[in-house]
Length: 420
Image 1 (tube, rainbow, N blue to C red):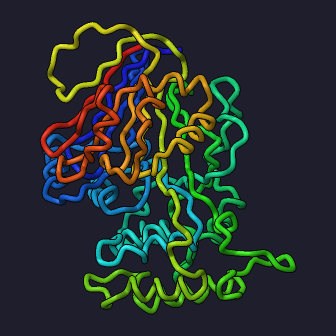
Image 2 (cartoon, rainbow, N blue to C red; image 1 turned 45 degrees about the vertical axis):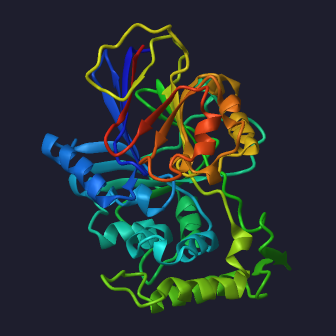
Image 3 (cartoon, one colour; image 1 turned 90 degrees about the vertical axis):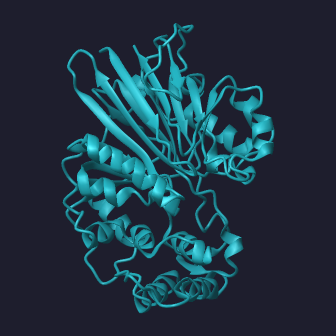
């Protein structure tokens, strides 16, 4: 085991999330850089933060860029990152194509941008359309599932899949679950589909990332049914492959496969009508889509864990702790049952090492339940919120009143540092 130095920063983007992290071996100086989300509701604020990084200089490459979900305030800075950096691994939540169409169409004018919609429909095509396909080595899609046991830990982790070739099964599943939109399904970026019961490890397996995808598939939601060995949309009764073709034709009729600066009026409504024609009211498919990420060293060595709103500040001695893990949550609806599911997914060893939890959805009361703070104690918390009305919400703040809480707003960032 090598000595590690870890630094993480929740940037001051307010309502949104933009987190940078780096873990470095103090023995070899090898490092691993990662980003979790990059977006904000305020483009002025986001451009200020991104501009400051540009002036200091971007790294030549980022090892891993993770997007929790596709709301604009979590992804509208991604193109700027890709303009400056090569990304070795782009990590996205795996989502069924029908669910993806629902998510794109339901929010009206406040919904995702046409560019972000294309990223959801076919990330390979989106990269190529922006000339970023040579900037990303591989796309890893994290698929959820009904876990019965925790993610293997440390030496119990199975050997990773080879990264020097693209598995035929992953290509097939990608083709089945995403839209071709008139193009080849393959591109310069390799595609892997990884169950969320497998971790991604860095620096000779000294540091790990564990993901949690809570999405339920359409079969579990009761919106499709199997008859005579084939799947059908329950509402329209149409063969699911025919439904996908119909929706793809609709997507192409509104030019969503090649987003224009000015899209047809009501394009989301057109897509929503096609979706609801086959699957019924969109409210039936409400889902908990947000890729959570646990990041921590493998070994449980006690050290001092520093969290602060200031980078240049004296680091006073703290009681050594093994609680060095951060848990990023994006916009997940964090109920007591979801917390229990994450706890089971991570396993006792990891759960007892969580030192900092991101409060989901900028402190919205709709993503939090009273009592969550005690279930997650003794962890500290971080809001990624502007301090505007209800972000964070008073009810969420009240639940966290006995906890240590930091806020990455539009003026101050939150820094996390430790060495072991």
